[in-house]
Length: 306
Image 1 (cartoon, helix red, strand yellow):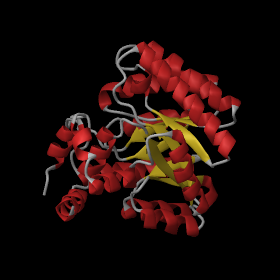
Image 2 (cartoon, helix red, strand yellow):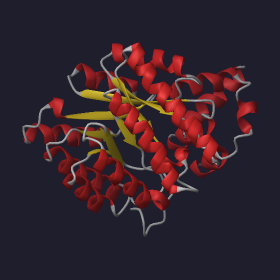
Image 3 (cartoon, rainbow, N blue to C red):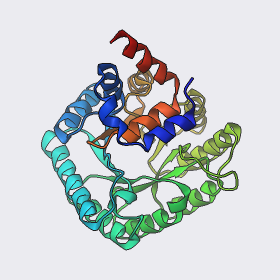
Image 4 (tube, rainbow, N blue to C red):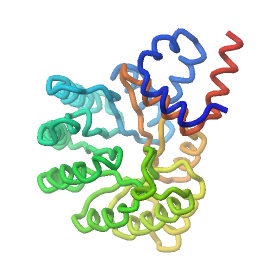
């Protein structure tokens, strides 16, 4: 089986995208995890999700932002996304990564750009989730979020925390005290043991601790996982504490465990699906393969069939 580290290495080789997309099986596999390259195609994908009872979070993929001019393009794109959500009537909010807005080279620029998107969302009565990236930018991401949250309402801007980081329970307690709407996920970046729990057992235990704090807070949060053990722990805690299904939502990735998404929605749980789109989809797609390398065999098997 192809090693996870190899797939992560390949995810940073954007030049391979043109070669890989010549093959129909690769194109088919890509469409499973990425809604498309433009807003219109993504709106149609989200409408299909809405039809089975799921809401969405609309996300533009672009990891190659290196200049202020490019960050301005990201702001314009997100304003177009928010307008498309309004005009189409789909049930969706948006998710942003601060590195797309200049975090790597100018944190103040990243704040201003993020603020412009959040302000537009507030005007349209929508919601922006600030994604969390690798641990090198955790603190500055939280700093920018705190500034945004001080200016905008609880139901306008939220944050993401990752249970594999040792600092997360402390960060979560601070976010709940503000209060803030939080999405908890396990985390997918490669981190040193002094920063992140190296063992899955510890990551899972921290996830459950954080989930319980979130659900008990009375604020509407997102429980982001495809792990059925984590889902079961969430359901059992909510039922034991008398926390209604309308008071939180499960969140999952587009194309991952569609059966689970539909099943939870049918049972009356709120389910939100993260729907990415954009022309620079290749790194994101390769990271999805790295999370589940068995998917690589599907691609290779179909290559052989032509």
